[in-house]
Amino acid sequence: MTTDVLIGHRRNIADLEERVKNRRLQVIGLYGTPVVLAGTLLVWAGLKVFIWLDSDTPGAINEIFGGVAFFLGVATFFQGVAEFERFWKDSRTPVRELRLELSLAEERHILEARRRTPPPMDRQASYKERLPGEMARLRRESRHYRRMHLVMQWILFASSAAISAVTAWYDAPQPAKGILIGLASIVTVITAAAGYFKPRERAFNLQQTADSIEQHATALELGIAPYNDAEQSRNLELFATTVEGLRADQRMREQQLDQPQQGQQQVI
Image 1 (tube, rainbow, N blue to C red):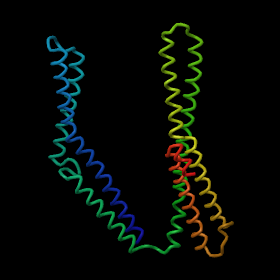
Image 2 (tube, rainbow, N blue to C red; image 1 turned 60 degrees about the vertical axis):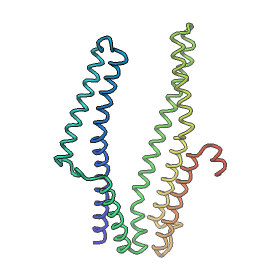
Image 3 (cartoon, rainbow, N blue to C red; image 1 turned 90 degrees about the horizontal axis):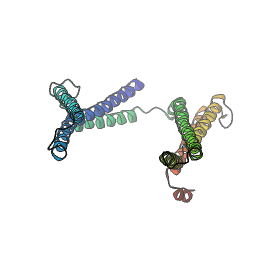
Image 4 (tube, rainbow, N blue to C red; image 1 turned 30 degrees about the vertical axis):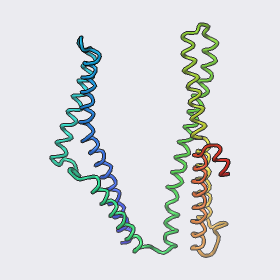
């Protein structure tokens, strides 16, 4: 019963979070679309007044602005109908009210969880069962940064090779000059982005943390050192403490990577 009650609270919170997000988008569209429509019409009229006052506006300009204005007008109409005819789930409901409901639901969940808190051993056992998802997340993020690093490196290699090839192929300033400028810009941007975001280091740290957590989880599962105590409660307590230390180290490394080079040296 405790599990079902807490799951019900979590589902209610997730539903309210989704409703708040959807309602925020609805309000932005409801009030933003007419503003964009008015701005489009003003720009269209301004072009006519300041550029083509004594002549006809080009047909392509009229088609573009006319199409955009028509689309925005239709969107404004249907959004207004959906809002005032209550076709949306939370029509005429302020976002502030939904946020209040979300805060109250979170507070109820905290109070209920405090009242129904299971023993420490049960919490530690459930913590162990949540770790496969955490390890999968770490490995997924590690693959993401690894792929980012590889893409950056291949673009850097290709651009550097293309600069040499274009320099050797063309003798005249044009079009080689423009191509070289573009390739050199790509190399500069990729180098700066790789130095700033450090995807290789992030991928290594994430993979290292995931492997360490998996190693400790395997040791606990097999009952080998350091989790070979006769009492399972001590093993679970040591396991939870160790894994939380690994996660704290991972967060510290992420913070160090986000700092400038001088700040990193001071932290280290």
